[in-house]
Image (cartoon, rainbow, N blue to C red; front, side, top):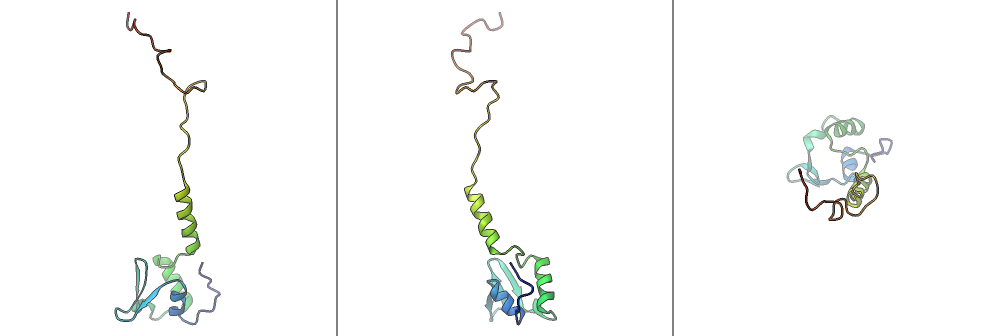
Length: 106
């Protein structure tokens, strides 16, 4: 989770602390599929950039630990037992003992 009270000296320090990698040639910060151009950093303080980055979805306000926990819970999720509509518990709802052999419609 991003601590706004933490003393990041610059926006670059903040982004590197959040796991972004600097690409000097292409002039952007990259993390997974997120790319932030160096031009996005201009005229911002660290706190104003945090607000902008959260609004654009660049920074996860819950932190990486939440995403790891969520992925684990989704992976562990399993279906529940099938609920029976029968008035009493039974392994077989229809079988040869409860279906007549003849006499349908007569």
